[in-house]
Image (cartoon, rainbow, N blue to C red; front, side):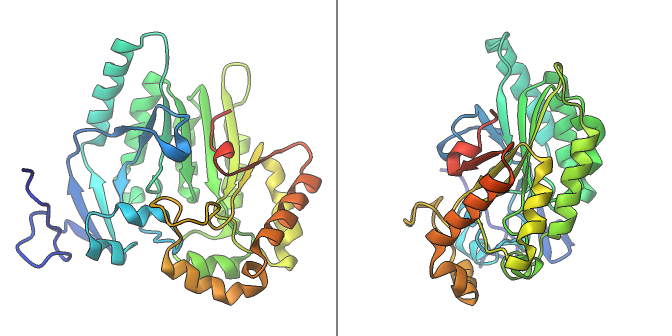
Length: 307
């Protein structure tokens, strides 16, 4: 039987995994991993693999479903205040991609990075783990989708521009800073994210040889104040797809779709939106369709494929 892993600060007995350092508010741990390419399933089953450089996320967004994948209940309760670095991830990825092409010499894999963490959370600025993974992947040219809410992604433009099939999904669930600060106070500003999209769009090639695509994912869709609505939608013209989804669309309590109590508490502050959420969602969707006639407006899972 595998030995239970006890993380320092989140266990009663003697810890087996010690805190490497404190980075901001987060306890940072390091571990080796046996695999970084995990078979994609569920919401992103259209891909061959998911790739998560880290476990945990310093942004600690109130609504994030990834908290369910915490190593233990104490860490689940302290979501956002710890992160685990998969320190050998680049080496393992190289081996896994070599193995893939030995079995599939004529087909490139499709990879979604990341499904349960942000590959550009603050610790990435120091560790450069995501960058090391890009350096490996650019040699093997998978179809790659990067999901992040961080402008730090612009740091890696020199690598991103070498991918032949790339989609970048930037999470912008609201156009209002007041709403962002309530639901995800540790995350980058809306302005910084939208600015990053513009930088990426004008810096990365899109032609017959380099198929580069851009999405804004508003999942879950949070309220946007009326005063911010026009400015937000106008700035979305730079992407080719906008993805929206209710908070959360399935309305059941499954592992993936459930909404955290922390976020449900915050929704009370925005009763003007959530008391009529489905109607407000439809009105917002119709505004997107009317104001962005040349851009794909997709809902839920349909928006997360590469094509």
